[in-house]
Image 1 (cartoon, one colour):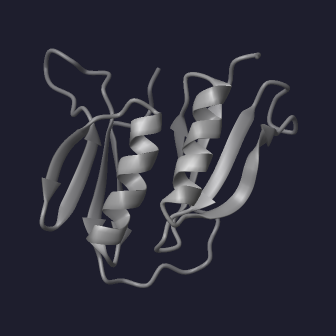
Image 2: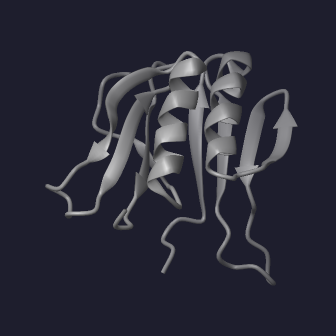
Length: 131
């Protein structure tokens, strides 16, 4: 069961976010489906013929982003994708919130990396497969 249909992340500067999220989403194989003056979209929206797709929207929002435990976690198909996600995020002005590695306190094969986007949103990529 895939729980989420779509997720939205607010950022104060879409040009800065574009570089970061273009880099991250390409490492996970998520294509950009729209690039508007007020929002970016990645993945694929569900339709009546395709009910399992997922879409990420990154939209312009001038609201403050405070410290909190909220974050968005993206599925990676391999540990190499997690590594690429992390490297691409750092190269696109993201900040580390945890380098790629096993987080066995979740489960023995939980391999993840954590970043802050340039606006301060927390994002993660995880692979649940045994290497």
